[in-house]
Length: 305
Image (cartoon, rainbow, N blue to C red):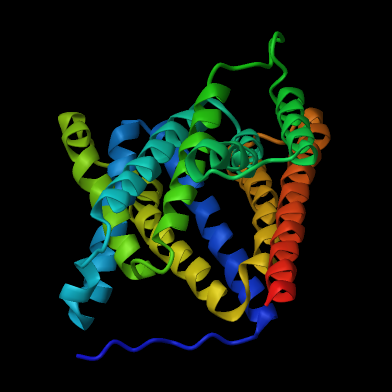
């Protein structure tokens, strides 16, 4: 069966709507995870359900269209490392949301572009100038404002959220390395499959079934939201370039704040309003700076030609 490749289209508003819907689905994932763990399910079981549900749905949707193409990879080592990085970030995040409001975990997650910028030095051989270093330092200062170290408001679980951001940055680096190597469908199969296999022994050691209709709903929804969210994000990049879509990732803090307030009665503290804009502004500056540098490189190459 011939593989159908959908063409790129310049429909930026539609792409933005898709990416916003994807980040809303990611908020659903975290909300379901927090609810399930608070309902008494072990965190490792919740992680397993999140990836097993996604893996089953991905397999059911895409395997009939071409199983060989779906599982064929040109770099299984990177696929494995990418899956492990994603699993590590999810484990740390699902434990952190038990102790921290979603507003705090989401604000800390926005340090990922800053960490990615730092990791690109040893792992990708990139050079980071003094302007981006100042943005990185400002971003982490914003995190300190949010978590309030040394006060009664501080909780050690913030280190889990920071660890989650590190693993997410590693995941993004691996995704960069797989760009143009494996299809997005293949990457989804390996990411969810690796996580499911690795976490299964820990999940089944103390497996518990939900005990209420609401818990059963969250139990089933978490895998669906994961699959749909990733599909929305992937589709968004067909309608709009990544440079247009990237800033809209910060809208997730609005979704997270609403979920934290409405579902868990945890309104944002005043320090969120102070620190989160600093973290977000730092990430946006790094994004803008990298765009400028990329354009400068393209201009230089064109001039030389």
